[in-house]
Length: 298
Ligand SMILES: C[S@@+](CC[C@H](N)C(=O)[O-])C[C@H]1O[C@@H](n2cnc3c(N)ncnc32)[C@H](O)[C@@H]1O
Image (cartoon, rainbow, N blue to C red; front, side, top):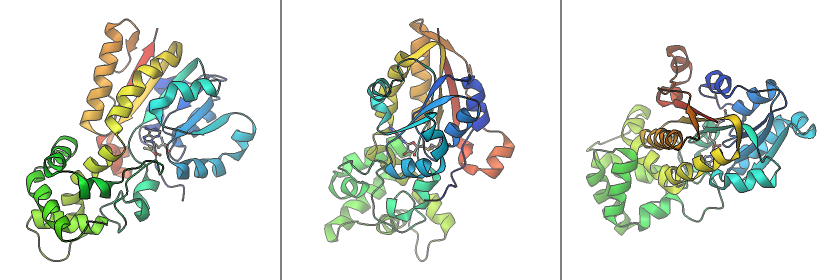
């Protein structure tokens, strides 16, 4: 795995965390370690968590010095278990926590992981390889109505009906095993014939692939569970920063922060979400849908 994930809203997120020298921070979505690196460079001590062993292996190689000097501790785990992971690593009261949700470029670029509509590969899509259910299991087993729900709710896919019909017909003949198999069902539902260009693949595939990824990794429930736990770990004036890429995810973050404020737990720092500027969007198109929200504990 190469180190080519470009962190989104890097400076904005870490500035708003107000990193203090010697302060303890949790990076709940370590990925390629971009946000962690910035926290370390400002003198913070980091507990880095990821469900993906490959992300941890990569960061372990690149941050040997900081690990040896006890500035960085790496843990494999799901941030829905944030409290347990933090406490068992002696991060009981922390100055800040960051969540940079979704998938990393490493995961998308590796065809074997099955996240990409542009790469051939098995329909896997698990960030955590110990999870039992892969995207292919959902595609080949779920009833039509449930597939339709997933595609509409999590992907806002307007051809969800035709695609779920197509999946059920296709799997009666043979299991849908690969990203290519799924794309050919989607392209039929869109009435497209012949070779697909990358542009068309992206255009017709991105919503269904996103919906499946969110379902396989139970992404919305995970962040819903993790946010209240993160507040419990923050010391006075400690901050939690969340970067989300999906409207449903952002709604969860926004609502959770409003709820915390109503319960007098602290203050919303970002009255409006922070978004990427034109320059960042130009160099890193993934940042286009990013929204950063920050909450400070009292
Ligand atoms: C967008 S990337 C983070 C990139 C990182 N901030 C950087 O700058 O390199 C998201 C990472 O979070 C991990 N992840 C997603 N959901 C998770 C969860 N529930 N618990 C722990 N890690 C998770 C993914 O495996 C992925 O490596």
